[in-house]
Image 1 (spheres, helix red, strand yellow):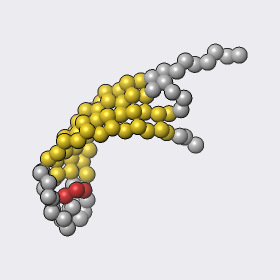
Image 2 (tube, rainbow, N blue to C red):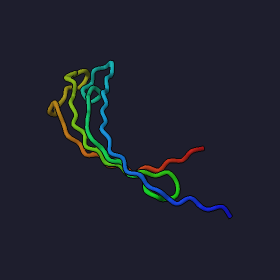
Image 3 (cartoon, rainbow, N blue to C red):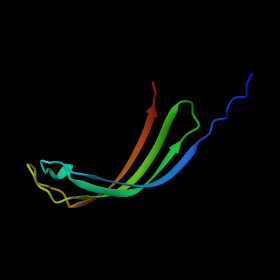
Image 4 (cartoon, one colour):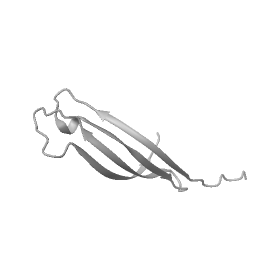
Length: 87
């Protein structure tokens, strides 16, 4: 019987960013975000990951059909548990 591979895990630390724009100019679809994150891939069977990231965001000052009732910038902490399947 061939030897089985031992389970392994990984921990990633990253910096990310994104910019979203739309043609209608709604404030909630026009923003920029940057921030650090951490992602853990546990040694469980299958493809799973747990991640958390902090983002600092800015609305880009476009008021289309809806005016922005919030401040022009925001902070957010996001956590995700994901399971992937390939077929």
